[in-house]
Each structure stands twice: as structure tokens, then as C-alpha cells.
Length: 436
Image 1 (cartoon, rainbow, N blue to C red):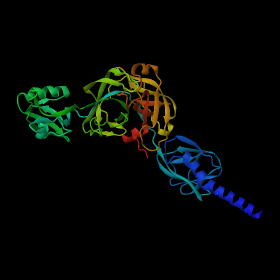
Image 2: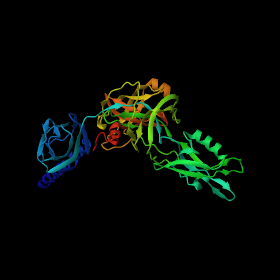
Image 3: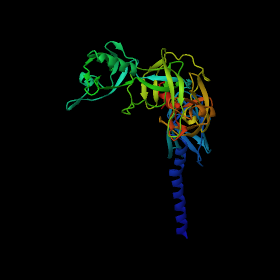
Image 4: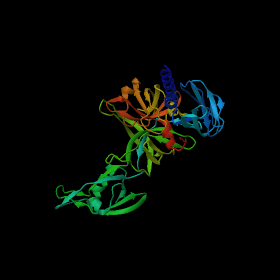
């Protein structure tokens, strides 16, 4: 009998140890992220089911209080036996916290809380034309001609490289791919072609001798070229104080190599939407826009990364928009499933608000894409576009009066649904807001 009692006592003690060492720390880990971000004055609460007193030790004072009490540096602060942990940001900075039982005897969790200055931004929705260079056409490949038993490209032999920007041919300005084709064809009949090209920001001259193709009777130079325009997108937000902006929410890639495009002289310009190809299941739709340049240059492109394009605004111009003034930035953890609104242009340059439903808001405490799954519910938008279309990337998402996300991708097999990125991660790329 004594052996049975001893065995029961042993199993009871073992169970308690397992509970304390494994299950309770897991409960803490499930509810508290590795990194938590708060704005100054903001509170965020968690429910943690731990039937024992919890102790917290902090490495800094004055940045955070917990459950209404300021933390004492390098001492174990007793939270007591309850199920709620409420964090409130006091002042800007970061503090490392250590949660434990029995005054540090059994560690539960370590995390960093960053308190950030409250940020307000003007939501976008503006249709923008994206130009990778301020002029000319881009060389994207060679076309090889036959001469006897050999294949060659006169342009390649002359020294033109893939990635070069052709800005003049025989001192005639090149504005787009159509003008380039016309000028090269007409000038090639006369003789050699003198190309003015930009390469790595430097301008140089290259002479190319066209080849008379015996099959067609035309003079050829063996080049594939493309407009410097990368298409239509949507401005996501901008900062009135520093003139910084973010757009698209995803990277711009080369359509031939699928690699990221190097953008050193890019611009965003005003674009008016003149037509929309409706989205259908398996067939993505598209906005068609007219680029308006000259005084309608909106700003520079200084960065092209996984989370969009970024730069400085020069002239935002006048737009009809439901949100002309700044609104608070929403952090990732503040986004919730349920109704929200999307800002975009479907005709001309008028920015309109359309209803959407956020179906999933992923728990992300580090920058990543596709944190939001959304569905278009607005019948007016569905009637015009059929759902999310190309050119809508970058459209801001607003929920509970905050800028919380940006539309990035469409589900090809269901264009009424798509992905979004948290606005917090895009703002981090502008250096407006430091995020841990």
C-alpha cells in the first residue's frame, strides 16, 4: 500500500513539473509574440490561462506599464493570479521582458516590446503610371540574323548591351517604342546609326552598321526593345511632412527574366483610367490608363523591393478623394476579420471607396507579404471590374478609421478574392516608421 501511495505521489509531482515546465510556458508562447509593437498611449490585452502568479522582469523603465503598473528595472514585478495581461505604451523605445513563475525559477517567455510614435498618413488610391526611366526605350534582348553559316546581331557587335536605355538615334529623340521603330527604320536606309544610350547613369554614343537582310530586303540591327513604362498601378499612401510615398505593395520584375528591375531614374506620373478589361475566372482583368507627363510627374522611384516601390513626391496634384487628410496607421495586430473599405480609381482620376471583407488576417510579427486575404463585396465595383484587376495593386485598405493594408495580388480562379500586405510593413520601407 505504501508503494502505491509513493507511486501516486511521484506521478502527481511529475505531472505538476510537466505542467509548470512545458504546458504553462506553451500557453504563454501561444498568446504572446516574440516582438510586440505599440503606439504611445496605446493598450493591448492578452488572455493567458495560468493558475499561478506570473512575474515579469524588465531591462528598462518608463517605456511600458503592465496592468496599470509601471515596471521596475531588473526586479521581478509580480502580476498576480489573473488571466489578463494588459500592455500600455508610455514613451518611445524598446524594452525586453522576461516572464517567469516563482520569481524567475521557471522561465516562461522572453519578448521585446517596441513603443512607436503614433503615425498618420494620407491614404492613396491614385492611379499612377510607372516609368522605369525618364526617357527612351530599354534594350531587352538581341535578335540574331543569318549571314552565311553564322548568326549575329549588328547592335550587339556594335557594343549595345541588354539594359541600355536608347534615348536618341541620329540625334532624334526616342520617346517610346513606336517612335524608336519608325526612326530606326527610316534612318537605317540612309546608312549607319549613331545611338545615344544611357548605361549606369552615364550617356555615351555607339555606332551600329545595319545589315541588309537578303530575305526581306530590309535593313536590320538585331535588337528587342521595350518601353520604359512598366504599366499602371496605385499609390498606397504618402506622408505630408517628409513627402515619402509607398505604392504597389509588390516588386516590379522584368517580364522576360522575372528578376527584379533595377530602377535608378524611375518616375511615377499621373494616369487617367480610360478603360477596364473585366476580370473573369482564369483570366485576370486590367486597368488601361493614359500617362500624363510633364507637370503631372508625381515623384521619383528610389526603391523597388518585395513590398512595393518607394520614393519622394514632387507634386501630388488635385484628386477627388474620400480621404484628403491623414488618418492613423494601423499595426498588423490591429487588423481583424470583417468589413473594410478599399480606395481605387475605376474611371478618370476620381478615387472612390468600395466595400470589401477581410477573410483572414495572419499573425505576423515580422515583415512578410500576403498577410491579408480579402474579398470584394461591393456590387458597384464587381459590376465594373469583376473583382481585383491589374492596376489595382497598391490600393489602400482602411478598417476602423485606420490605414491597415494594401491590395497586392488576385486569385486567378476567383478574381473577387485576393491578397493584401499589412500597411505597417510598407511604411517600414519608407524609413518613416522604425519597426523592430
